[in-house]
Length: 313
Image 1: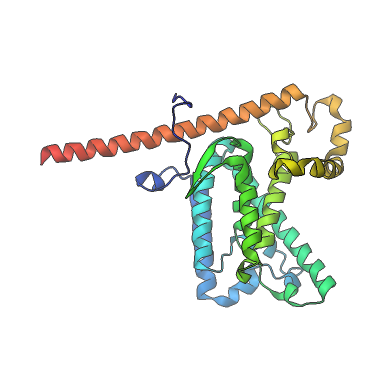
Image 2: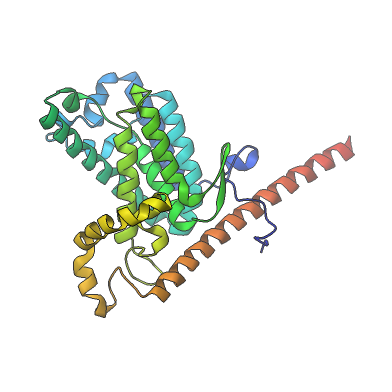
């Protein structure tokens, strides 16, 4: 196995032939769906009324809570969604498995749409502006943000070369959220996508923190301090956020905490928490090292082929 001390910083796949290899059938299938739905909406604009989330019509068209996440209305949007899905899915599916990743995508997509729907209805009642009821809301950004939370959980201390930025995995969701909020003040088109991104981050954290079943232990959730709600924020804010987060923790899993003696709860001993966190990091490290080794082998194979060709010439 490659020595992690001497290995280059782990990177998201970029450039070269390796960019087009290693994607799973699930991610490629979802990418095809995103492309075909975008094409359908471009060819038949009226289809947007039946596929996107329009809060005033969601009650009869309840399927919009599922289909809206797969509708990208712009060309840049569908390109970003497809590339992000392929790259992030390539990192997570080997660790989670196809079944868990598909379950994660469905839950995050549906719960994000529900939150956006409730928020739009609430804003309408507060402001009485009908734009909140009839603006088509859609996009895969909620799931993409959720996949970044998965990277934060599994690879928190790994430095990833995310295009032009080199950043630890644990800070990527927070950085995306911050950039989205700031840019939304200057780009009106991003305002409708902002709730999708923020709710995608939050609902994916809720699922991974409290409900995802860990195959190693049979328990649910990830109670480690490294994955707490306050871990998304700078350290100086955590003393303020931790008491607030504890209230929601008691609401979400108070009964589970009282049933701790049966060993089926979210909360485990500090030793178990530390062991699980270390195991998660090791799994992420092994997956990244394997991917680096495959990329290095592909580069060497290309160089060997080029050398043989030049020798023949």
